[in-house]
Length: 134
Image (cartoon, rainbow, N blue to C red; front, side):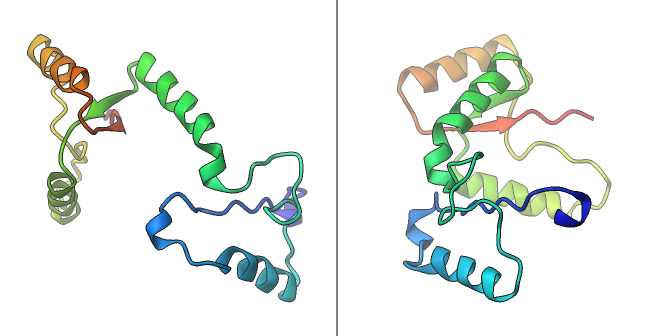
């Protein structure tokens, strides 16, 4: 980035708390400084474009997800984690060039809308998936 006049901004992925290793973020910054490539902005050094920990940016991600939902570029997915993993594996093994979404999104039909309303009204766990277009 610096070669082309850009800035090196280091953000740390810490949203999966089950995999968080204490002290790892500090070690990464130490190694970058040791290697002679210190970030211009980071959790340690701060800067204009923080926060630098992904867990502190969740409100920004929520706003972006809401915008995608409102513009029809994303949808609520109620598939189980097991189903998503199975579909992901099937898609990776499919060499036909087709790239369907990883879940059972039905394209906004009336019955699918009722299904979503039923799931959402019960506050069932879901994720927001980006609508893939060809």
